[in-house]
Amino acid sequence: MDMAGSTQTQHTEYYVDEIEYHSTKHMPEPNQNDDSISSLWVGYWLNEDHWKIGFMDYYAGSLQSTFEICWSSTPVINANFNEATPINPLLYSGSEYVGGENNQNLIRRAGSYAVAWTRFKLPDAIESANDILYFAVKDVSIAGGHAGTKYPWSRADGKDAPSANIRTINYHLRPSDS
Image (cartoon, rainbow, N blue to C red):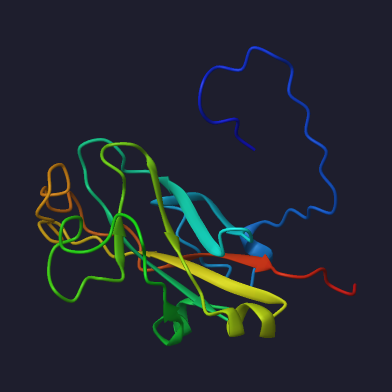
């Protein structure tokens, strides 16, 4: 949990109910990218009808990194990542950020900050037909590739992806019966 923004001058309390913690070794895909992606989160903003997904990029600073994010109604693993549906990122994507005509589904970090994130929408029919949605992030960095047209994203990736593995997270749209 994070209290982002200005310094907190008052005591803050959280009341949390029904949270489960799992290690990656208990996930459908135990071989996850722990090399360049950490602290993966996803959330749905009902009132605005959009999603946000974000994570920490271990290679923050002057090294740019590029990521692909997909979703599915069934668990995503390394072997079926290419069968999952890429999100259509609404932020930090497109030629200004990632370059190239065929990179509209890729994202890059917001400048030199360690946090990579974007906003996206999913069809209402998908949200209403599923109790759980599965998300996966893959580092697709190519040293010298993905240079955008807008500074600081005009710098190419500073490295190749350190792992071919994905990082996964699930989102429960409705409580489970268990």
